[in-house]
Amino acid sequence: MKRLIGRLSRVADSSGCNQTRKTVVAEGHVPVHVGEEMERFEVRADLLSRPAFAELLRRSALEYGYNQRGVLRIPCPVPLFRRLIDSISDPAAAQELALSLPGVDGDDDEEKP
Image 1 (tube, rainbow, N blue to C red):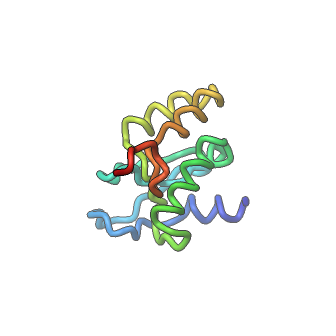
Image 2: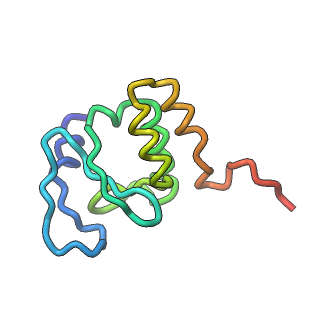
């Protein structure tokens, strides 16, 4: 796990976004792109083990696969991701927010015709 976190915190931005220079990531942080607009965040690496982030990572794997190159992409609306970051001090609230995300694999509560 430490090796993975170290690798993710040093990853260059090769995700195809319109950035021409490499961005230095703060030590102990992981760069992520969130939402359709691919807004960039630096998330503390220790947050990746929290249940709410585990759910986001699971959804990311479902949406984009396990072979993502470059910065990790999170399929989550940016405002909801910001609320999740703000609520991370309360694990129950963060988990509830993560579970309220629309399903990326068709498991949300939409009615089927």
